[in-house]
Figure (spheres, rainbow, N blue to C red):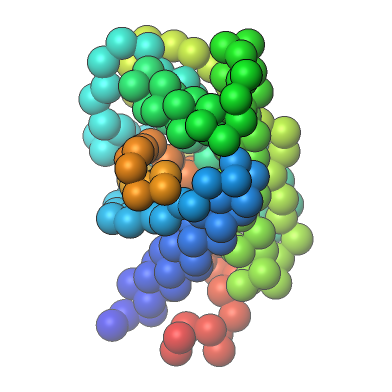
Amino acid sequence: MNATKSRENYILHVMNKGFERAAQSFSQFIEVPITMTNTQFVLVRHDDDVMFVSEEKGNVYVLITQIIGEFAGKSYLIFNQEECEGVFQAVSKNKPGLSDSLKEPLLLEIDNIISASVIGELADSLTAEVYGDVPSLQILPASALQDIMSKDVDHEHPSSVIFTRTTFCFDGHQHITPQFIWKISTRVFDIIPVDKLSV
């Protein structure tokens, strides 16, 4: 395996551990057992290639977290309408009386948990000072997703894009498969400690 591929695989391995950590934190937060299955990663070295953004219909909820520190980036957690309702139903079972007005704060907290888990795993593994900012939420037509990604391309600071889909299973019944897109400075590959690459 060449050095570039080895570095890419290492980052994907670390991110996968972050998602496992997220499932545990998410589970504690909503007091419902959650397992994570079928995580798929596609890594693209050029952030102007948005062909892997999946085609959704109707409105989508896009939670955006800025990554700040030794390497910069952004994460985009994307739920369609059906997935939002599924999350809300799963949480409502253990938290009766949850009102519609709490849907958006709930999604923001879920993004906080998942993003923080993955960013924390990257920071620990790379011994890097990096953290996620407060997430923001945009509700927009699915057709606008590619435009959002395209506008975020910064040609002066090259980034790679990691497209992720993972299935969160709530208590073995409800399955939610949001799309997660990570745009991370290519610097992340350069700061991997050499001794970690044999892992």
